[in-house]
Image (cartoon, rainbow, N blue to C red):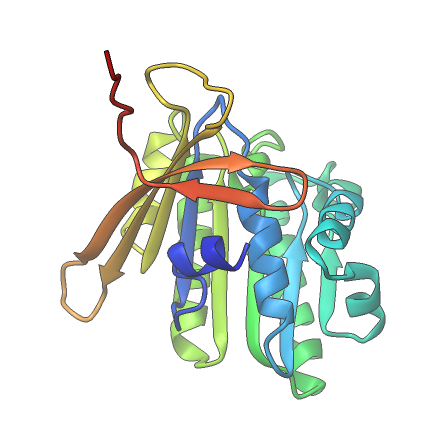
Length: 240
């Protein structure tokens, strides 16, 4: 898992990470890996907004990967928000405001506890479209979150967009804000017993007025019981 964390740029001081997940793939393993990496940082704080998966799911995955989310909650270094419980009957404007209030309130609580290296993870931003939000309103939300990350040196965001190939307007606009962009998709050639899909990792240089690609690479991955195996794309030769 350490190789996955390093390859995806999670160990670098990046402020705004966007994960685009295709409609026929599952990339929650990236969120689980990132949670473990961030919680191991000294005096770190994490806000996990569970949309695609539940807290119980991430807690179970964490135990397989060697960390305990329930213990992190009790130590007040992890705060969990499960939107479906509180937001299902809200209108679009109310929902976005409620989400921003949840983010700001939990951020303040972590800062009051002197937590550093604070990360806020939304594990599926497109979830809010099923509650009535438009792509335009979610783009505006992304801009607010990006602005907040620039104001606070110790704050970073991770936004995952599910069904990104169906919500290209949303994902394309969020890509312009990202300093690390990950796209997760199946291989076009089909399914294989030892390959689940492909991760394309773009690290962006945000210092110029126009975002420039600093580096780009693709990796094949296979999810095992307790780890993720990575390999470089290629072809096997046949000896005859």
